[in-house]
Image (cartoon, rainbow, N blue to C red; front, side):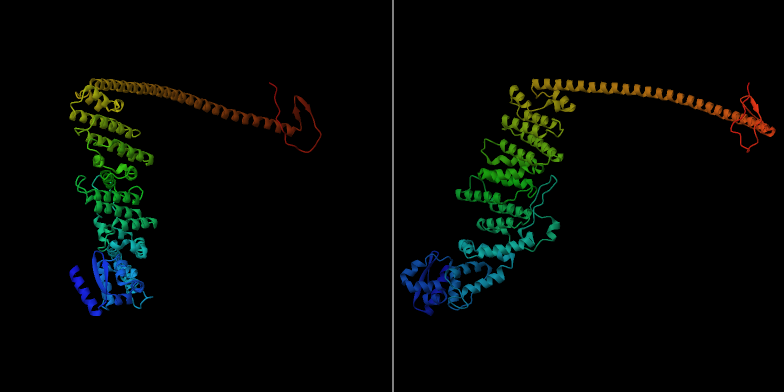
Length: 559
């Protein structure tokens, strides 16, 4: 219904009911309604009619918080017509009926109670209906929050997101390979996705900010919140940004407010968003000239997972700065500092990844024709610093310097020497030294240093070779001595075994003789016993007869 048709319909309805009309201002449109009918349903209008004249009433109702379509629903209700309530019109209808005081205290079965019942039974149980209702409330947002409609929607959304956080959308998977990250869920996730639903990111920032903030307070998984925040930035900034020169001041300010608000809402944590997407948001903040706090927040998040970044991320980072500065060296330095201060030193893979990243980045920017020499030197020094502790050689940095010299043939000998100061010749591999010694693009002093370092490396190699040769000879000599000692010991053992056998034989023979001698002595003693005489030490005597005893010792013969 157009506004003209709406006015004609409303006038016909009011004229048929009463000749006494009340003129009110609804937005920019003056509308007429029978004041007695309206006062019968509205406590506010009834009170105003008692205290003010018709002329004064017009000015008192000039700020009615409604549009013509919503006021048309109130007029229909006052005339006893059926009111078609929907998700799209229910919030403005509740706000207007609350403003007019159309409650049960003034009239039974009044409009406010009917609208609230519809809201509770139709809107609050459904995520989709809540989003659609909130979108329709943006014109009367202040009153929506004042009367508690927004809080009711918010609590219902929190309960639903707690049960199933996928109401916020699928989380963005952080890819571990070198392929492009995407914010689209994979096919497996899509099989179990919810039915089509209203997207939270379609709401205005005034509604989106308190919703996300409250969800963070209720510990909704940060992966889902982070994904929703990125998609909000993609919808309201990335797709709407047509370039810095063509953007109006108002739009630029609005987008700056959006990116600064999203940075505050974005949870802190590693791998909540792919590093590429964080760089995209940082670049957006730079282009919109967001606050330093906002840019620093993105730098910190990037620094915590810099080992997952790609070369193209660093290449596009500083494009939002002044045109004469192509690469923001200090920004990259700050990100590196965050990485080294937060990364677990026990995991060497991350440090190696960042060292390789910086080397690749240096090789890429070396091809830029208007890259200032100071900028290249600073990046080369950062690349050298990133390689510390990783046992990496300087071949990657040498390659980047060679590319820079090839693309910037106008450099003087002195300027080339300044660039080469960032290169550690001691860490170059023999193959790189051989290439550098023949490289005509290098300054003479650098070639001399390369030759000198190559000579030192050769001397060290020879020294180590001689050392190991001497060590080998010494070990062989020691082995020969040990072998000779073992042979001597074996001979001594054999001699001892022979001596042992001989001693054993002698002992055996001695025992036999002793047994023979013992037998002879025993025989002679027996013979003397039979004669009744005993001999001791050459004296003979005849002992008195006594008890028979066994002789304790034999009789020794004098030789």
